[in-house]
Amino acid sequence: MKQIFFFVLLSLSLFSCEKAENNFDSKVQAIMLPPKSEKSKFTQNDLASPSKPTEAIEPKIIKEGNLRFETKDLQATYNQIIKNITANGGTIQSDIEGNDYESVFRKLIIRIPSQKFDVFMTNITKGVRFFDTKEITSEDVTAEYIDINARLNAKKTLENRYLELLKKATKVTEMLEIETQLSLIREEIEAKQASLNYLQNRVAFSTITIEFYKTVAQESGATVSYGTKIWTAITSGFNSLSGLFIWLLSVWPYLIITIVVLYFIRKKIKTKKS
Image 1 (tube, rainbow, N blue to C red):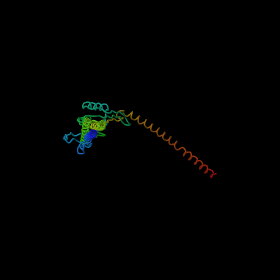
Image 2 (image 1 turned 135 degrees about the vertical axis):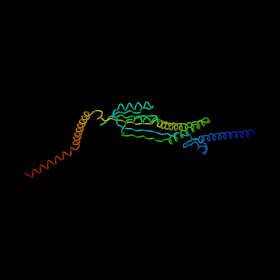
Image 3 (image 1 turned 180 degrees about the horizontal axis):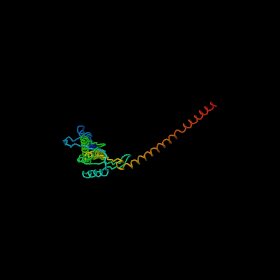
Image 4 (image 1 turned 90 degrees about the vertical axis):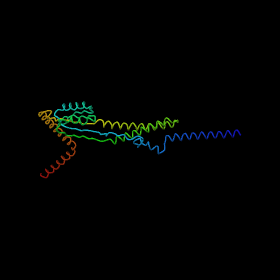
């Protein structure tokens, strides 16, 4: 009788333990995989937390400028531009000097705080009578900024939720699964943060490309310009002669055949006359 009672008691204990473990697994699973109605609040397409009202965001405008003009004094123009860059808190991103057949030039790519854009453009174009190129663009990226920022906040919210789950997890497998998800979420957060930083930088600092040049004739004088033209003509004639010689080399078989044919024709004509 005691053995039967002990067997029944043992069975009930095992059944209770299994049921308790199943209930615990169900609870953990419920935490990690919430119902659709709850999970839908944390989808990747969620743009803002429903509990927080959307804050007003100032318009995000990207301003860019592109200028090209002629100047009488390259160094004076360069000094004027540098002076205005320093006065307006800008930086030189690229500085290129060069020359072509008719002119010498200098090309600068500059980053200027957006609030100083208009003042800077006015100051550096003083005294310019004619622009070969003058292009000013403004791109409104407010919607793109709001979208990236909202998606970033949603990912951060999801990250915090997984961190809470990690604190409640008791099994190694659960911890590993949560940490895997956290790793993926953090990669997405870093990517979106980088995109947001890049956009903010383009909004905060305007990019301006300035190319100014001076013709060789104005810089060197008529004598040098005439000598340059003579040397160019000589070089061009030499290049033409070289091209003719190379062409003759490429068609020499046809020339030989033509000469042979003409020889026999001439010989035949002489034979008929004799």
